[in-house]
Image 1 (cartoon, rainbow, N blue to C red):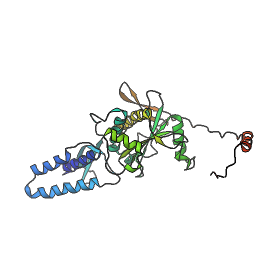
Image 2 (cartoon, rainbow, N blue to C red; image 1 turned 90 degrees about the vertical axis):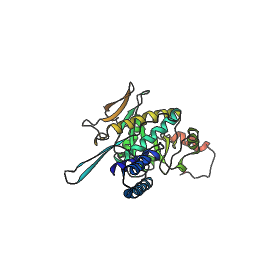
Image 3 (cartoon, rainbow, N blue to C red; image 1 turned 60 degrees about the vertical axis):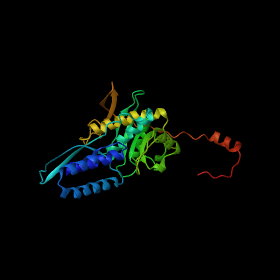
Image 4 (cartoon, helix red, strand yellow; image 1 turned 180 degrees about the vertical axis):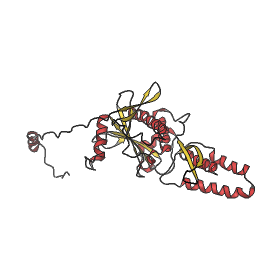
Length: 311
C-alpha cells in the first residue's frame, strides 16, 4: 500500500511539474494485475481519492520522493523514512538560457526548500566570471511568496544584514535590495513580456503559485524583468542552490555559520561543485551627505513655480 501511495505521489508531482510520468498508470496496473477482484474496486477508488487530494493541495507541495523504508520505531510501532530528490534536468530543455532557466526553476520548486529553510539561513554561490558571491535566501517558510532571493555581493549582503537586524524602515526594504529574485507567482501576475517569452518557449504551468517569475531588484529601483546576462547569472546560481540543497538534505545545520562565523559558499571548478566557507562581508558604513544649501537656494529662485504637492 505504501508502494501505491509512492507511485501516486510522484505521478501527480511530476505531472504538476510539467514532466511526463508513467507512475499513475503503473499504480493502477499493479492493482489490476496483483489484487483479487474483490479488492480491486476499493483500492482503485482509494488511488483516485489520493490523486484528487494531492492535486488539490494549496499551497503546492511538490517534493519528489526518492527511496522509502519502514523500520521499527524505538518508541513503539513503525517509522516511515523517505528521502527527497530533485527530478533530473530535462534531456532536451527548451532552447537557450531562458529555456534552461525555467527548467531549473521547476526542479527548485520540486525540492520545496521552504519547508526546511527560513530567511535566517543564508548560503552563497560564486559567479565564476566575476568572482562575486550571490548570497541565497530561500523564501516561503511562512507559506507565502515562495522562491529564492539572490543578494549580489557586499552591497546585497549588507542589505540582507540590515533587513534581518531591523535597521531599516519596512518601506525602505521594498526598494534597493540589489537582488535577483525567483518567485512562484500566479499567471495573472506575470507581465506581457514574460508571457510572450513562455509562449515562444512552448511552456505553461498549471495552478496557482506555479509560474516562475524572475526579476532584478536593483538599489533604489522598481523591480524589472531580468535581461539575458542576468538570466545567465541566475541560471548558474540556481544550479548551485539546487546542488547544495540536495547534497545537504540530511544535515540540519549546514545553512548556519560555522564555529568561526563563516558561511557556506558553492563554487564551480572544472565542472564540479566544491564547497568553501568564507567570512561574511563587513558592514558598509553609510554616511548621510551634507545638504548643499547654496545649490538649493539657487534652484529655489531659478526653477519655475509649480502648484503640485510632492510627498
